Amino acid sequence: MPGKLPDKIVLFDSQCNLCNGWSRFLLRRDRDAIFTLCRVQSPAGQRLLQRLGLPLERYETVIYLERHHRQLVAYHRSEAALRVMAQLPAPWRLLRWLRAIPLPLRDSVYDLVARNRYRLFGKRPSCRLPAPGERHRFLEETDVE
Image (tube, rainbow, N blue to C red; front, side):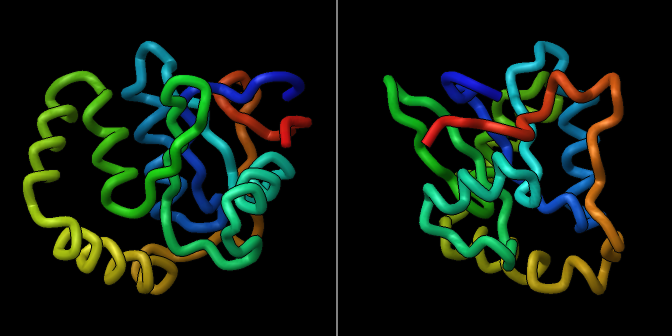
């Protein structure tokens, strides 16, 4: 995708069944299409991970990038998920109240699930690719550094 990056990007592991469920959940509930999804395994995802200084082959968190002023700010783990949920229509946005739980406790639960996600939910032998009707919602390529 040439030019400026979208304002709200959700990076996810497209080999993880739980993460793919999360992406399908967002596609169905984000009626206004405010979020752009990006597979960490895609060229754009790899470029964004590199830009953030994160590992390119080991994915342990959902990452939410949101533009504040002219800069993309990265949110990780439970903070990323809850910031996304807070922008979805009701009743999902009510989950934003979970941010009242102290971050270390939220992230401990998040990390427990993340570490065991392949065992609990399975892993695809290959990456999920966007269906033709979803392609406009995905960031696959970018020339932005």
